Image (tube, rainbow, N blue to C red):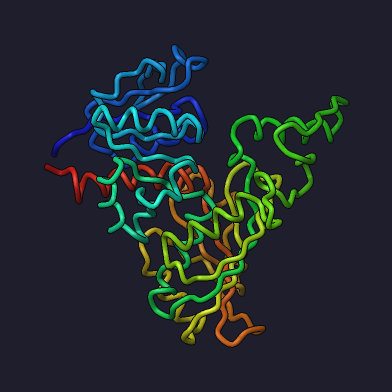
Length: 340
């Protein structure tokens, strides 16, 4: 099997480290892996396959020796360096929001729209969707194919790891403070205190009253699944370290029963249905942490509309919501486009 040189850009961050873990776990056909990050992280060490990788400086890194770049360094950094990498001959899979709505850049969840990957030839870039969008479209796709979803109402319960290591540290320190350290830890990464609280704001507010995170879910779902689907979202940050949960309500053109939906989801790659109220079988973020599947529970009829279903959708946001999906894109890219 042909092997590929891979650069993980943003290798010192939460997602970058998870990318390295998943490259190892999935036995990705790597020849050489390069860990790359900003100058402040250059020279530090990250682990890969039991050994140490020295983090190299993105500003001076030579992408001509790389086949595939897995980028997760922040939107403005990707905006600058992804085109540089492409010009040097590297195909970029970008985890930031910068390229997602570019009409010339495919936005891909491999189980949902793998055919879109072929569009990478336009700009040499494939975009990884938002974490909350990825797990939702995993639940929507098989039902949409069978019954045509017309409307989605989603409320999210998103872990602090989605906001980075500093956000995780903030939750930890505020929680510890609550139990008697006496040290006041004011909000920094968030608009309000996150410990023992929920915050109905992720990212900044827009003129329409929605946040950027909410509109990402709206616009990305249309691009990935079907532009005709109407979507409304409320995204909420909760005091959970890792793992996003979503309450998803869908309306369909054709009638579909919970039993039919359950069967469709059970047979969809990457989805695991855990749904038995009699035994309290449903999945929480803590149970999803460290796992690759998107878990779906509490599939039931929405009795308030004619053709409606409610679902509970949970996934590890650093894995399927970011690093795993990016590596799966690269796997599909190799299988269908770069195998020669």
